[in-house]
Image 1: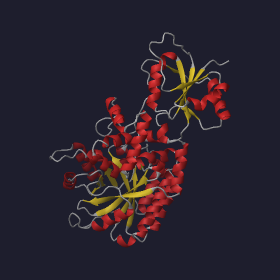
Image 2: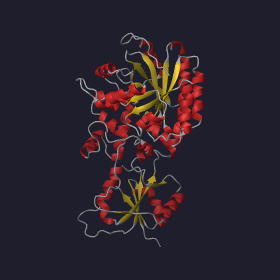
Image 3: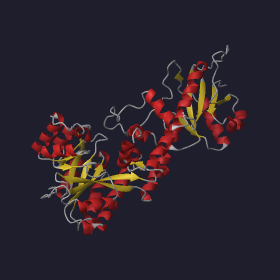
Image 4: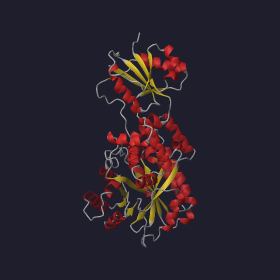
Amino acid sequence: MNTKKVFLLSYDIFLFSGIKAWLPNLVLVDARSFISGTQSVIPRYPSCLLVIDNRLPLLLVRKWFQRNSTQFININCIVLRMNETRSVNRGYEEYAFINGRELSDQLISQLRANLMAPNEVVEVTKGSTIFNFHLTEFEEEMLYSSFTKEKLHDFCIANSLTTKSVYRYRERITARLGFSHFNETIIFLTRNNLLHEGYPTNSHPGENVIYGDAYDVSDSGRLSMAIRNEEIIPYFQPIVNIHGDVCGVEVLARWPQGHNYAISQREFIPLAEKSGLMNELTSYLMTTVARNLVDGSEDINKTLFVSFNVSPSGLSNPVFYWECLNFMEITQRLPIKLMIEITENQTLTITPAIKELIRSLRNRGVLFALDDFGTGYANLCYLNELDLDVIKIDKTFIKAIKEVEQHIPMLESIIHLSGLLGLRMVAEGVEYGYQQQWLRKNNVDYLQGYQFLPPVMFDDFMRFYKQSVGLFESASDSTFSA
């Protein structure tokens, strides 16, 4: 007979009292209880299964575990999902789980199976890192922006969120920590070095997959339905020449109704990549934007390049070629040029098929750009192997520009290299006038950032586009040449 002890940790132990008769090894535990240090006899269990009600805040579980760890020698953990919401399950993703909303007999059967299975156990040691709490980069940036009204306002604009949506994000983080008020959350995170001053600096290209790990199958289905129901909204951020005239636009995606509050592309794009929906999403965006441009065609009187972000996996998709042709066919009567920004959130394996795809599309007038130059996996390799037209200088380098005149070796080297290779440059993340002046002085071709306009919906972009001619200075030609 299996003597493994089963502890079911929950706020509402009475909810599970009916299954106790069927599992003699089951112990129902109120998560708010702990072993008193004055208790002389404490039972120890060489092997046990800890079943956690996922509605419990992660840090409350950790606190209970630390206070009661003297009871356990080895332990195996499984999560009982009473709530499928992504924000509730964040932190529990790495643990096995069973659906707590099953019928009683099915739930008992699954618990028995886990009880009898020779699961790998975790040895309990002092200072164990089990049940660690983590913030995603998006959450950390969002919380840091909460310190001042100005930063919160800028963050909402950058991610196309309402202030109310940010408050809901805060509430979910506070609930995960088990606190009642957001003030307690900020104090706890700061004191425990979980929230660093400034935006996160320890991330590397490709690490945003951490967002994807926080999603489950139900989220993938929800996103697929959102694409079919046209809930994903394209946002437009203008790209201007050194005189301030709009000559291009980058298309970004927003999900205003995701999980009942707005989700920016930084949260759901990794989900699309993980669940294999990126190709479907890209196709939807290109078709939607093409129709928007046709609807606003009477106001587009000069060449405008329209840029879409495409991941390496997207370039490997044979249908992508036809998506580009479809976009050009819909907009063929307009002075529109299509530009593809190759993102580097994944490693790009340069194959003969990808080279042929780029060559063929460039022959048809499509421009190709390398996004976030200087921060990706193999920028220099791509410059050598691929036929490109543009490099987009990452905002990390633009932030190095200060009001006081100074040399910026890395940025100056990128500009020099672009000139040698005959590539046009787009500087991303331009936020201040002195940055604009420095880039203009150093012959950077095109600029993009809050200094001009944050990502906005199509009607707002078209308003800015119509007003842009002569906004800063009169200019001559403001278009790309393929």
